[in-house]
Length: 350
Image (tube, rainbow, N blue to C red; front, side, top):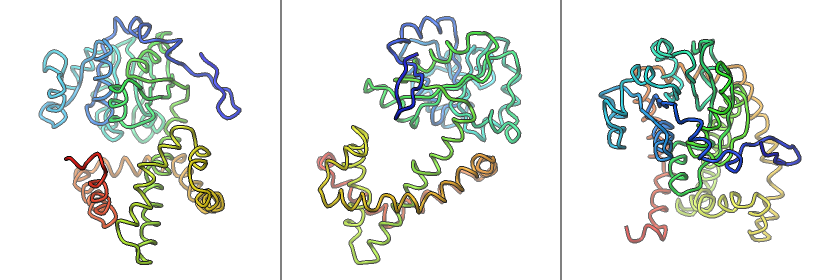
């Protein structure tokens, strides 16, 4: 492994230099990778592996929209596309990529078809970590591992097609064959990871649930709404409020952060912006610290997992979800955003 200094802490990292795609193909040459679930991560990981020359099949319920999507993506019923149980039986690596609630409901059918020496692969530590709530307890005769890309399934595929890939964490929960580590790292390289850093199932899910509910999605959306609403209260137009809250962030500033860090972004803004940001960042940090403390405790105790499983297992979940998403989409802020986006130069000719 390469040793990389992360802010003064040296960590072991697997890179493509030491574990190139050719090595991954050699490790996986006798494997049949069955991707179970063709929703968020499934399509990207399956197609990336297929493009990289790995023997991949897909397991998905026939008659669903995701079955049709798999066919549209080139998977052939009876050859590379099967019902879930048949795919699991045929596979030697079972990539269990259903939703967390789906993993719980389908587990009794899945576990019956796991053969000795198979690998059970996850992209999230949820089901195994919260086994008391999910019932997902892998049998002792299979390898159990995860590769968790640090991005959405869409990003995993788009970045791969652009030749960059996306980084991922990996963990070995159970090594029944003595080959779990090589199999796991090979799968990470095959799905397009740029580098792989070690974690545990528990650490992955605790950090992931905190991040999604926090800065990556929940906190970001909430803080944006708070600033937009404050600007509107003081007479700023929707276009101005949206531009100063969202558009400049997504189209300019966050890209600078991504390139070279927060200090780089600060250095490339006006002195007035620099001074104000430096003066106010600690106030925002201190104001939100108690919220993040509560959030992490809720995640670590399993409360967030139970809320998720309960909500997502309801038969009318998707209908309720659409109502909640529509409330965001139809709000003044995001309707203003749609109009602002239409004015971007790249959209002028559309």
